[in-house]
Image (cartoon, rainbow, N blue to C red):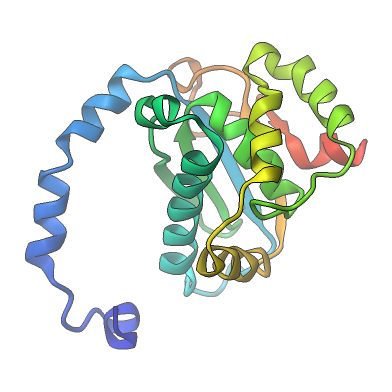
Length: 201
């Protein structure tokens, strides 16, 4: 992708974009067959008055990092069966990003993001974190996922990209306790704030 394609849309290969969309119908079917929960990531930046200049960078970094985390932390069978991360929306004026995905993976992803850790880094107070998370999410909290997270190693480009994304300053990471089909979106408020739980607030 050139700087011109990113910033002003020059030379975007629209045929490829729409071909990829149309060939991805299977992912839409998978979504309808999957029990998904809501993940909200709230950044401190940018100011509400600014366009989302970093939208594409944050969007693609989040998608790629979630994918690589699954590949590194799940067994090959679990990886093949796992759903991707589905983009739901961005709340302007608040920098709140909403994603949908399977609860097990969202718990690992959300917890590590709120802790600002990249694959391969040690998670502090892990036993305490797992105990607190289990009170809200029960058996969907899988200790093996967290162990695999700390044992794995992210590609250097992924680690660098995630660190850049973290400079947007994550203010809140929340996950819905109930499946999205049961939520009253938008405006759902019954979310578990992982970052606040971990800070003991």
